[in-house]
Amino acid sequence: MEKFISVVVIKALSETDKILTALQNNGIHCAEITFRTACAAEAIAYACKNYPEMSIGAGTVINADQCRQALEAGAQFIVSPGLSVGVAEVCREKNIPYYPGCVTPTEIMQALELGITTVKFFPANVYGGLKALKALSAPFPQVRFIPTGGVDRSNIDEFLAFDKVAAIGGSFFVKEALEKMEG
Image (tube, rainbow, N blue to C red; front, side, top):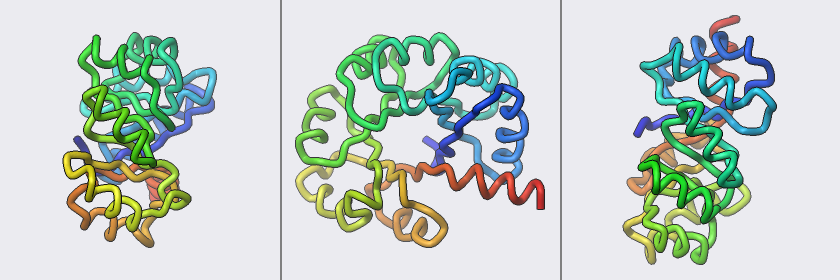
């Protein structure tokens, strides 16, 4: 797994090249293309075809139907804001990594029952940030986290220093990459 997962919202397919090229030029080789827009599946298919050296996944996947669409488009991993048993089952069938959003002990226990040991911690800033991750790691030492939401350059090093953090997710990677490219 890459250490940095850029959360990418593609509103028009024509934005895909600019965003993914900027990310690559900035050393980011993993993109979670969100299912928040009408062209998400098309953008994932395009990215998988034209950026084979990048790890392309689907984000904001909230049900099994979206998950199937994302996987048909070529998504290599699936991310959800919460835990969906339906999405987990589709991913398990297809042997695709699934990173559900889990912020409570109950949600983490549900993920573990589904065989999931790496979860998205979203929104990290709202649910206690690094302090919460450290507290949750005590009863769940086998779990690794992908904090997203409220993670940025001001606190990224603190998160990365914690050994239970598998990766950092964020849209700020896209903003930074585009600013460098245009700047």
